[in-house]
Length: 284
Image (cartoon, rainbow, N blue to C red; front, side):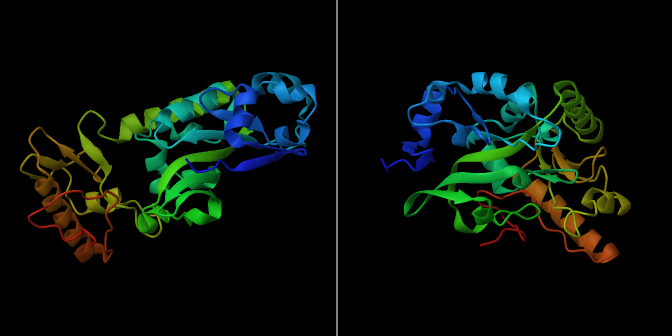
C-alpha cells in the first residue's frame, strides 16, 4: 500500500490514520481547527479523545472566535448519514441537505446542491485515487461549479473528503433539516421511482427547468411507462414498466419544446449508462 501522508503535530510527524486512532475517533474523524496545534509530542493531550477535547474547549469559544470544525468521511458513506451525524454533533452547514439521496462520492462528483448551497462550498480537502496512485488534494483541485466537478473529466476516484463546518444549535439545525425534508416531500414525486431531476437548471442554476417544462404544458406527458411528473416537471417518473429509452424519448420532447418556446438548450443532469437505440444527449 502507498505510504500514508504525514501530518505535523507540533514537532511530531504522524500519519492521518494514526492521529485519528490515537485521538479515539470512530467513524467520522472530527477535530476542532485548533486541535492540531495544541497536541504536543510529549503532552498528555496527545491521547485526549476528540469528545474530551470538545468538552474541554468548546466552552472557551466566544461569538467573536470563529472556530471551524473538520469532519472527514469516506466516499462510500451515505450522504444522509453524514448530514445526520453533523446535526447530532451540533455542526452547522450541511443541515439543508437532509433527504439528499446517494453517497458522499456522488455528491462531490456532481457538486450536489440544494437551493443556493453547493456541497463543494464545504469541502476543504480530499483523498483521491488517480492513475498514478493515491493523492491528497485541496478544494481547488475539484474546480467546483454548478452540477460539476473536475471528476467528470479526470475520472479520478474519490476516497474520502474533509468538510469544514461551524458549531451551531442542534434544535435550530434539526428545524432547518426537517423543513428541507418537508419541502422535498411536498414538491417532488418521492413516492415513485425516478432518477431525480432530469435536467440542470438554466442560467447557471438560477432559473428552474421544471418551471420551463411546466410552462410548455408537458406535465403528465407520458411515453411507454415513463411520465413527466405532475408534481415537479423536471422529474421523469416510472409508472411501473418504463424503459430507459422511454425516459430518453420524453427528455428529447422536453428538450425540443423548451428550445422552441424559450430558446434555452437544456443540459442533462443525469448520467447515461448502457446502450440506447437513440440518445442524442450522451457524450462520447
